[in-house]
Image (cartoon, rainbow, N blue to C red; front, side, top):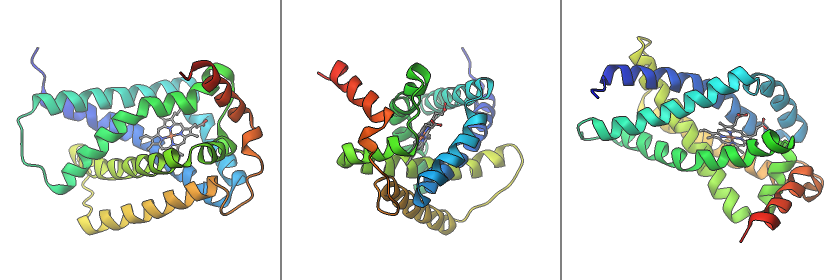
Length: 218
Ligand code: HEM
């Protein structure tokens, strides 16, 4: 089968833009953890009515899947070329996101799909409290990879559909540093540094997690 590289690029552009809309809202939501549970959960409940509206959720997750598949096809089918540091980081962050995304969706969306239990702020507080050495580095690198890949990706794809948005390296670096600070502050927020988080180990999400671990952990 002959793959048309321009079609693949267009497909990657449109699926990337579609997912980036969700990602922007999602990261903004995550950063609201700095202001506590009411701000985080309130924002999420409104945003969720859009991204978990079945046809839109199907579109969002479908776009993500196609975007990843096209990315892998392009890596294997296009001739090897020297990558700029910026493009190299784009690729590294994409690999990390691909490695983690399925686990992330199953862990945070699975409970509401199968048990009608939503993680919400309290669920993330529980996770940070339960396994901080895992969740701090994981969510930090995951959130930051999402931010960098999303922002740098937008500058590439908008150019591909005729909208030229040039972003200097220095601006991209500064924006990523701000995103790093906000993501770390948000994780501290879930961990109860800025506001009182109550007793996350008493939440429905904590109970479900512990039950799953008892049933399925070796
Ligand atoms: C610190 C970083 C992050 C945290 C704390 C986080 C947390 C969450 C939570 C709690 C949910 C469930 C939302 C709900 O119940 O409404 C969720 C869903 C999701 N997250 Fe993340 N997330 C992070 C970063 C990311 C990144 C970087 C991506 C993708 C690149 C991502 C992709 C998704 C997707 C696809 C869903 C499922 C959306 C749906 O179908 O409802 N997340 N995340």
